[in-house]
Image 1 (cartoon, rainbow over the protein chains, first blue to last red):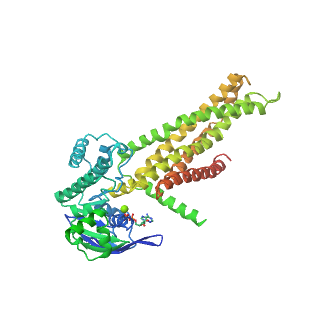
Image 2 (image 1 turned 135 degrees about the vertical axis):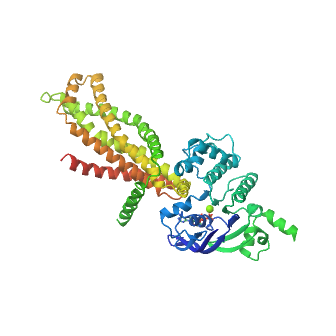
Image 3 (image 1 turned 120 degrees about the horizontal axis):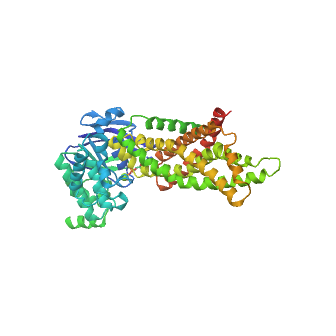
Length: 251
Length: 247
Ligand SMILES: Nc1ncnc2c1ncn2[C@@H]1O[C@H](COP(=O)(O)OP(=O)(O)O)[C@@H](O)[C@H]1O
Ligand SMILES: [Mg+2]
């Protein structure tokens, strides 16, 4: 369980997150949705401590993460996996080296054990034959798979994903979404995904939080979202022509 | 002025982070060797080309300026050597490397910042400043003095070659000048300077890249800032070190 308790964040006087309180449940795929620029990435980075919040606190299973020292946080960070919007793979390392890095740095496993674990994770994300390639030689979908493999290599208890299917074609998006969803189930991870893709919402969203201009506007499940009584949210949900037509058809 | 103080403060805070708690020694060793190849070996050709030409030009200029029956010819060789040892091979080479290595470091680290690679390291629990910057500092501080030695040697060879090829002076006199009034301490002085300059270039450029934010334009600006700032600081420290070490 991850909890944000009245967190706010501003940059140079401009408020980006405004008093957000929300709870994300263990073993579920939690979604943060909202337009670009609404503050999703800042919220995600505030939860993991890449941004320090100005006020409020973040809790990981009842441990107040915000007030821990750098050293104490390190223990929790080992349990965090994160997938960044662009993948954020190290450009100067191959696929295998990228996935293996956390093992190199934080475990005392033998080379053979590490290679085996890396192979397992790459197999889990269905990426074969790319071991020796560099990030610049991979397609967008492959980069996302490597990023997922790297995020799960240390067996995280919390998984954060910033727009995991941005820049992917619809089919690959669905594959990546389902991959994250399955991994969440399989290992009982607390997963939080940022997205502006309604398709993901309907496909894998178990708990959904709608952020608008830095404020929490709505939260609920995907079953509630279609009949939510919230003009802002409806605009967002039915933004695409397809969704509008579908709604007209069902009414 | 307040801006400069604030930047200096942030710079020293970053250095504090760089020199705290290295992760695993073995990984650092590998990265230091990698950086020596990238930043050090990679700078040999440029250093060599510039040095050979400067050695030749200094010898030519000296032979024109010192053209007098009362001045012994070997002083031309002496002057070339002193120019290379005292100033060119440490300071000028450092300025040129500030352009090459400094902009390279700032744009590499700046790109890692804006593509969230630094965030990715941090989230793993890695001290990203130390992991990325320390190996570069160690590698350049160890390697730049070697480049300085190389530059001195190649510069003197350049002077000899021009003397030999154009016949403006007797090569034998040039060699004699090379040995004339040689103080080993001036080599030490030169090497100390180049190690300090290496630290300045690498740490300032890394600083500029590490705090880049925004888009690729910002990375370009960071690397320009890196070259300008490290060149200025090099000139200031050239003065300070000369005052301390030579006077
Ligand atoms: N490091 C930063 N410094 C200043 N402003 C920022 C920073 N990061 C994000 N912002 C601002 O915060 C707002 C929300 O950004 P973000 O969270 O990235 O939106 P998104 O919902 O698209 O992920 C934007 O207006 C952006 O300009
Ligand atoms: Mg975003």
